[in-house]
Length: 329
Image (cartoon, rainbow, N blue to C red; front, side, top):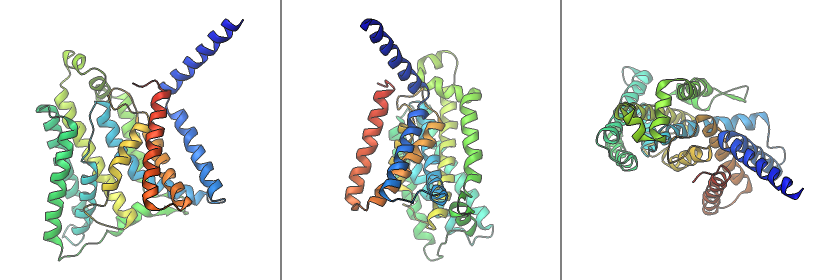
């Protein structure tokens, strides 16, 4: 009798472990709900539809940046240049607000610049086989340096965040639905459908799961990686434009603090740093979790150094717990 119970318990544990491994969004939604309850307990009445709109609005740029990490991590890589590209995009667009082409010209310029950064990253990683961490970290310094040069050249002209970006980044419908969803929903749909329903998406998983087998099957990995890092850089530029509009600030370091949270959101969302497993759905929930966590820490009114320690500790604990639950090694 006891043996049968033990066997049944073991089978149930395996079933739950398999479920959580294959559908990581289940425990993530549970964790998100617990955090929402905790913040409502800490500050009763704070959780309202308008508060939810603020949280969603704040989490959208982070989710896009985390999407960059998700896509690159599926291949076993990472993109540490996204924050620099995002900051550059917001700043350069602001400096070109009075150009003949106006905001449209600024956006085109930053998208081209971002695509060039992604192309260099992709060539370095895919063709010259430089480790993604080294390549993208190096490019982040290059982008930062060029952005500072541009700042020195444009400092006398002044800069202001374009009105359209302010509306798109911080505006809401009825104080609940963010306008930024107009950008995010189509982008998220393209990513999720692209990963699951297209040959290119399957190639990303194949390269991350077994690069040798992918190469032997005729996959031209270098082409896949070049396109991947171009896509990542373009997404980072879009996130930078939204952050600039959200904060009504244009700075060459505006998005720097979002780099590590973008990686954390992808990891918490179930994307393996070793490649071959993950998805954008979990990453979006991971971004929401980190945004709600930040709000909770703010509500508690802790000193900034304590906030940083607590925030970092919780990220490590959550990531470690998730790794344990899903049997990731």
